[in-house]
Amino acid sequence: MCGIAGIFSVDRTAAEHESISRDMAAELIHRGPDDAGSISLRSVSLGFRRLAFNDLANGNQPHASPDGEIVAVCNGEIFNHRNLRDSLAARGHRFRSASDTEVLIPLYREYGLDLTAHLDGQFGFALYDSVADRLLLARDHSGIVPLFYTVVGDQLVFGSEVKAILRHPAVSRRVDLRGLDQILSLPGLVSPRTMFEGVHALRPGERLIADRSGVRTERYWDLDYPLQADAGPPLEGRAAETELDRHAGRAAVLLGDAVADRLQADVPVGMYLSGGLDSSMIGALMARARPDHSWPSFSAVFPERDFDESSAQRLVAGKLGTAHHEVPVRESELASWLTTMVRHAECPVRESYNVCSLLLSQAVRISGTGAVLSGEGADELFGGYPGYRFDAAGLSGSRARGLDAHLEREASLRMWGTELFYENDQLAAQEFRRELYADDLADGLESFSVTGQRLVDPERLIGRHPLHQRSYLDFHLRLADHLLGDHGDRMALAHSVELRFPFLARDVVDFATTVPPELMLHGVQEKAVLRRAAAPLVPGEILARPKYGFRAQTSSHLLASGADWFEELIAPSTVRRQGYFNPATVTELARRQREGRHQVHAHLDTDYLMVIATFALFVEEFGLPCLG
Image (cartoon, rainbow, N blue to C red):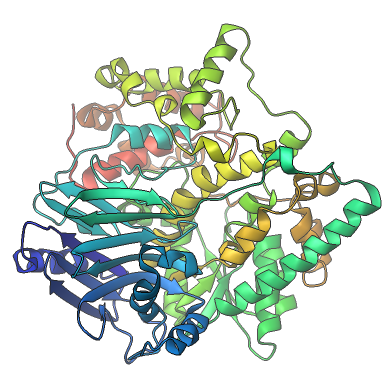
């Protein structure tokens, strides 16, 4: 990973904003401490910070075409660059380095805006064609790498993190209430929304084109499951077993290739080890790819808590022969790191486990490891959450009845274009949020409530199997901007560490959409295809373990321990001064938890007090306006 930033304006010369773009890139030094670069050409000025992985001596950016007409900067990795390089060289293109991202400009020469169709990687890039006076921004298919932008006057301002955009003197700072309501209602933010009004995130598989005709965005890829009408009858008996074996074999081959591709680097690579199926399978495939190598592994452990999983982690590390590192997470760490976490996440959060991710990446960096492989994407694509079991058993659905049920269906139609229940009864939750917001905001809740926002493309849901619908929603509402974003990319790059995700390789994702839904939960077993594929690789004890979500301290833990710093963040004086939430409601929430009348469950409940506390830090860290 790296950091990119830039400014595009057809009405100004690049020299007019060259120094600003350099300042914007300097804000991203944590994403790229190894080198820096910049270039200005006609209407664009680009800044770059490098975290070096390939061709350490010659791979700095920006890249430029031999004639100087096209320039590009890229944050991320192109994992199929070697095959692309061979193909492009056969067409007459020449390369000055062995850098993976150097393939972007010759790909653009060959395929124009459709160059993204040829990439397997994780990327957020900017490419400028001075002849066409056109800027292209693109984010990778799964949304692993972020890319943000805003338009101020006649300038398009963009960067790998919002904090780089905020360095531009014309960009104002205001809370985006729609983003805040998303965090209170959903696992996290959903692009294009951010927590900063007027600043947008490119969606996964989206590109932006800016030229003299203006600025437009378009989707070049999206997760696409088959229509139920095109599927055959459900598989049963021996036919189901045969197909399960076939799909498991294919998954093992594709994941093996994806892991091998993601081990490419001229710096040490390691892995995150949770003790669950996904990370254990990745570790086993790493060991198979290089049997004589002891890969470093890193795990968060919780010495003070009953949700510690260190015994399972040690079991897997011992079986795989990794050089294992345990990273203890104590309540004192939460107090020390929460502000830093919020600054890097660029949003409030519902769970404190981002601090665990921050401590993990610090340990990785200290060890001298540059990149780590991680298992995100497996649950969303292969049926790993409990909700998939509920769907398969017909137990999912709204608890509302009568008129309330009708209103819930209308809310679903507004949010995702179908009468699909996902996670919660939205209107009941909205009425609680009305009590939670300060009076002035509560009066205008309908203008920014998540129940009035179109969050995904309904055409990708209509006519699909319920398990595929859930997978699509998890992919966009949980994975891309939350697990890969504030929890993944931002926490790793805070310490200059790159995360790589074999389950999100293009071939693996495309394959996952072909798995029949009845095989996702064969025998009511979550991730049946992956479990069958992992059977020869992973210890039986791990295969038999039920899924444990990654947990950390909740607000209930912090209130019970008497954490003064947390009490201050949710105190009536703080809440009243900032002016976004109702002090009486916040005080009542805290009282109920202190008295034991309600204890927040890390996975089943929304931890509203954690959102309120981290929002207080968010407002202070980014100098956002207080309304009180």
